[in-house]
Structure formats: C-alpha cells, structure tokens
Length: 328
View 1 (tube, rainbow, N blue to C red):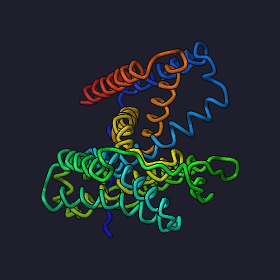
View 2: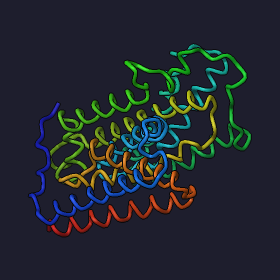
View 3: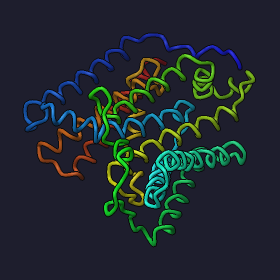
C-alpha cells in the first residue's frame, strides 16, 4: 500500500465558473425546448425508455472509458471487450451451459482484452492510443473470422433460462436491473477513484506522470490495473446486450465507443478540476442521451443526430479550452 496526496485542485476562477454556468444553462434550455416541442419527450414512459435503453449501457461503457481517461489515456477497445463478452455468453447459452459459468466466462473474455492491452502498454511500451487501436482492429478481425464474415448468432429459437433474460429485463425493488448496475458500478468506481490510495494514484499519474514516476508510485501496475478494470466494466455491457437482443451481432459494441469518449470528456469539462470523474461522466451520458432522444422525437434522422452530437461535443470541448486558458 502507499499513501499519496491528490493533485491540487486549480484555484477557483470567476470566468471559468461563469462558463460552466452558461453551459449548464444552455443544456437546461435544450431540455426545455424538447419538452415544449418534441412530442412525448417529457412523458414518464419516454424517460424510462431512455434511461433503460440508452443511458444504462452508455453509462457503463463511459465508466469504462473514464477509468483509463483518469490516467490521461484513452481505451479504444471497449467495443471489443463488449463484443467478446456478448459472444462468449451467447455461445455458451446456446450450448446449454449453466448461466453462472457462462457469465463468468464472458467476463473473463472481456478481462482478456484488458490484459492484452496491459501487455502492449506496460510490457512492450506501446502508446495506449495505438495499443488499444490495434486491439480494436484485431478484435474486429477475430469476430469476422469466427462468424463467417459477420453472421450473427441468435438465441431466438430455443427456450432460455429466466435468469438469462433477467440480466437485461429484471427488476429489483421496482427498478430495472441495468439501472442498478449503473448505480453500483458508479458508486464503486467513484469510491475507488476518490477515497482510496490507488484511486488518487491514478489521478496523480494522469495529471503529472513524471512526478508519479519520481515519487516511486508503481506506474506499470497502476496502468495495467486501469486497462484491466476498463475492459471488465465494458464486459458488463456485453452481458446486457446479449440478454436484451438474444443474439450476438458482430461489432455491435463499437456503437458505444465514440459517445462514451464524448461523455467522459464532457464530464471533465464540467468538473472544477477539469479532470475525468464519475459524476461528470454520468452527466455527459445524460446530456448526450436525452438530446439525441429529443432530436429523434422532433423528426431528425439518425445521421443528423450524429452531426448534432458531434457539434455538441465540439462546443463543450471548446468551452473547456477557454476555461483552461482563463486559469493560466
């Protein structure tokens, strides 16, 4: 174990705080606009649908991104971890393996992606961006080769154990299980990053890598742990995907990658310390999910929704850059 001091929070800056307030007011104005002009946007059924189908999987994928983002890096291979977990779970359920064994094997498959990334980054010294990009390409090729060029595996023609369907559709105390997954993972990750020596070491390594090395922090171990944890969290999305769709569709996990990165960096922009953090990431997920839903309900096509999401992320990052300059 080791004790460290968390990096100092930048001094409060009136201009920076004003920009944060303006950003928050702008997003609230967007939500008000959709409430007034998007049919059904503010209904309970729509909010529940967005939380369950959009927010929950994206939030978990974004938490996976946040773990590595705290180190000042990015994990482009979370989609591979999602797909591998989904593939293993669907395959084992198809062969009537017990659910406990299937879920364990699926999470181990996702864990393997993280271990491979850790090997590339820590042992071989490959830059995280290039290492995870390579893992992404390898993962895509493996999926294509193992499915005759991308043929999905369906579970629709056989009786499935109720516990398998419950992964994505079950409830506890009247709340959908996927929302419980988000809550438990978010609380656990926030506690890890903010309340433990390991978490603070992640922050120091991300903010001041050279200081972390000269201070004797176990940089290789911390880096490896971050990539392994990121893939393991992403694997939970693979479990939910398999249960919801009752199938494995190659490369479907990559659909979460860009929005997850955007949510993590939106959250960092809203933070006073301008560092990736769990509450900020969840805020970013909510904004992206509900803005996309609002655009859909007023009739914008999927492609224009993607354009709007990109513009939204650009605006937030530009404001973040202005905040950074104001604090120099």
